[in-house]
Amino acid sequence: MRAFGAVDAVIISVMICGTAATAGLLKSNRPDRVVVFRQNAVVAEYPIGNDVEFSVNGKNGPVDIEIKDGAAKIVHAKCPRNICKQSGSISNSHGQLICAPNNILIRIQSSAGNSNVDGIAY
Image (cartoon, rainbow, N blue to C red; front, side, top):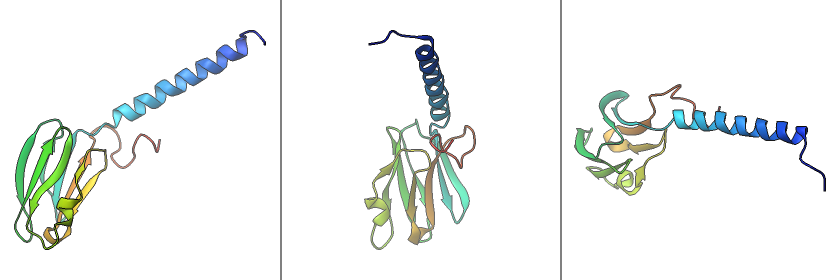
């Protein structure tokens, strides 16, 4: 067995610095808002940290959306199969729910940095 040397210290230092840099990138891209689009136009925007229920008008009628415990989901929508409602909730950055019959898109976004690139892609 060999003793702990200078090379070992350098390797450990590089690993610690790399881990710290990666953690900073991931933290900076934490989702902070829910944005609702209708036909590519923003119709509502709420902080993901606030528990709220709201409704937006879709093509076929109102779509009821709930933000609770850092996740968003469609509670009720007037559409034939309710696939959007069955999709469950989203909580990760760039997560999306789509109600195609109502032309509604719900997206979770981060306001920090480039919204098209997540922390893993850096």
